[in-house]
Image (cartoon, rainbow, N blue to C red):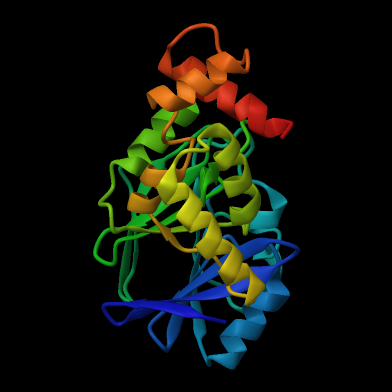
Length: 265
């Protein structure tokens, strides 16, 4: 399981299900787990690295992100931070949080700034570790893509993505799924002349061929290659017009057209 280090803390990559990633932030002794959809791989990682669970943080209510919470709590009673504004409160969340709140874990130490990022779900949140420049964004921003609008609107998702795109360019993007190759294949259909995107696809294909994760990405790379952050680019809008997917040059309509296209791609 590869790790990314920054200022004495590291992030373990824990694969789960078919294409999920669970993130374990640790200092070699204590750990915070992000979106544990299942408990077994998390517990295996904690045991392997001799880590004591200190807290759990959740981005949204879908089971592949929080299904392992109950089992983990049976072994260790720790605080569970989760979104305050989901339609139904998440069972097991002891500390509901929303934008303006900070999650502080003294034993690491770690401080996560909470950002409201609705769109995929109405209460979806993301966590920004400003010191380490890490972003844990669940199913809002993906490598080369974004989450489906299962509950929210295009207006909500564009606002959420703009908030994330405004973070420093060297922020590492820890999304929750290995969707990169399929997302980039679609991105090339949306913006085929994007040379940075072509290069990214070749690099991602090489990573996956070697069994390596393509996550994390960076905010800079997403802004250069992700169509869901580039929906106002003239070349993208012209492509949407040519395909009959867009009738008016308006930003949110362009985003919505790309999202609808991706849904059936």
